[in-house]
Amino acid sequence: MIQNAQPTPRNNTQSKFSDRQHGDQSSRRPELTGKFKSIIAMKKPTHVPRFPIVPRLRSIALTLTTLIGLGCAFLSSGALPPPTYPVARFAPLATYQVSGEVAEIVTATPDGNTLVYTDSASQQIGFVDITDPANPTEIGIMSVAGEPTSVAITPDGRWVVAVVHGSPDHIAVLDLVNPNAPPVIRILGGQPDSIAISADGRYAAIVIENERDEEVNEGILPQLPGGFLTIVDLVGPPEAWTFRDVSLTGIAERFPEDPEPEFVDINAANQAAVTLQENNHVVIVDLASGAILGDFSAGLVTHDADLQDDDVISFTDLLVGARREPDAIGWTTDGFLVTANEGDYDLDVDFVGGRGFTIFDPTGNVMFDSGAELEIALARAGMYADGRSDAKGSEPEGIELGEYGDRTFLFVGMERADPGAVAVYRFSGGKQKPKLVQILETGERPEGLLALPQRKLFVTANEGDGTISIFVGIGN
Image (cartoon, rainbow, N blue to C red; front, side, top):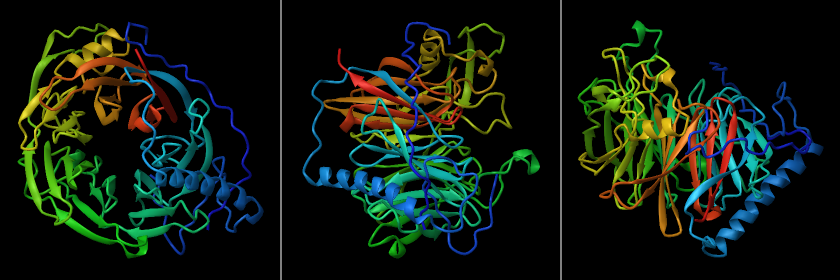
């Protein structure tokens, strides 16, 4: 059952962040027994009531139903209205402090009016109304009996699908048309990390990472079992969805017996691109058949960098042969792939991670690599953290692409900027060099990036301080 507390107004803090392009300073795993308990409330509860609070239930349920109903009606009326002016750059609009502890991955209903974010520390997902994006308001939370690692919404706006690391690992599916109904629970075969849903609503792709335990053998790979990809056929109600597992074993050159998939994105042809971060590899899977269409090593980078934590920002060292080890990956509309080269497995070398982003063609040829450009831009904006120089630098983690009118923007989230940052690029196709537009300051450690072109908005979920940053596209 869905339960709730009486909705009360929240004070929303307007953004104190700015575009600093010109140099300002800068596990719990509970036993899963009986029925899953879910809760929708305006505040993080001190405990979850065992019985529904019926008089209070209807108001928040009605709020959610009304929001989603309006969204579905809007979508059914035709195409979303285009921007009234061409977006040239982005400006800070609002910052929202979530009611729980953290905000990690964020998605939105198709109309862009409601955000849904994951909060693994509080074992819940949250719902934020941004009908007025300058004044975001939380309208509900739902506990998911474990740590949600990612969340997605079906293109028709009907189902919220959260992947959850729990006992056991599972997906929790909430019906937004009938939020009074308990979520549907389907068990997964391992620890999930990322989920993507195809644009036609036919498939979900879930990466089962089965992440290594750094307390076991000092975290040295391999650590079985290896990870894999789960394809969900989204036909009928969630109870009828079918699951197919795709083995990723024996593909990568590094630790082939122990693949650790990290992130997944799906293109218009229903092909899933999957990063195997610790394996430094990318795999492309056809979702209809489950066949592996191709794979390639993410390769190495050599470029200028600051490799010393000495309170001096100077890109005069040389990063030599560092594995990219990408985290997020994104398809471009013209069939190329963009990776955020965060780096992870540093037990065998001094430095890993490319400290930037790379554009690949589908066979693995490098079309562009940002080299030192990204961190130099961060330094010029006053947001480079020199204390990270002798580790993995700014750790680019997130990738997002959005078409705002006739302009495509590429967003690169840097988890270890000071305090947090997203680089915004104009993207003109995989064969063209992206053009840096600006550096946006976000909350601490941005993890989830979300482009909302239908609203001329861009959103980040910031794990470090539990905030959601909202930016608005502006003209020249």
